[in-house]
Image (tube, rainbow, N blue to C red; front, side, top):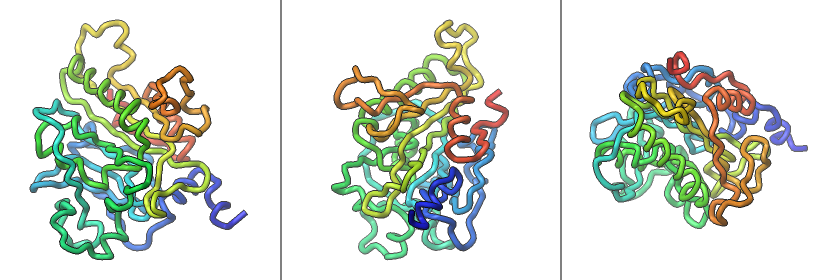
Length: 303
């Protein structure tokens, strides 16, 4: 067995291996400009592996949501946001990159690729590029989906490659999209206050998979929401979905069924990309097992 494979066999080493190992240099741990993205202004607790880069996603001089990113994996671990009812359509997908990932004194404003006449090699090394996804058989899977955002600017801000991961079409355009619509409907019908959402990924337990030998591919997607203020007359079949609920979705039809079973009767397009609904506690248990971290996603369990 190679030295790298030996390193990748444990849970915490697995996470660091997927992330490309520890990163030298100073890594900011500051979400102070976008704490409104988190319930009770508190980011998740227990995620303590080295190499993470918190990003307050800024567009048109406004902070819109938060992402926890790693340069060497060129992918986010999660994005956190306040859900809002969209006041318009999905915008044109003008993809953007993050100058702040290249130089500490660079602009913190995300920049459309179309405005870059020539891409600096330092930018290419620091994060995913649109070219990474071409001919990869993967789509750009939003962690913070555009239609979970209220204003046009909010929705445009989600089209940064620091908010997406390589996601199979059967998940992104099928079962996972169904989950996103389901959460939106619950917010509209039953929440009387804010809903905070955190959506993230789980790496493979085996050798990391990458597209273009650069961008890490997750084996699973996961998501959880917190809606502490909801209708007092919740229907009986909805009471277990509040104040919190969660889900894990398959991003590989060939993965085992220990976490998410396969529905063999599903339509061909979505077969193998099932989504398992679960309690917040169950999701945090899965994260603890796979990442070797005692993770608490919402302050006080959203109570």
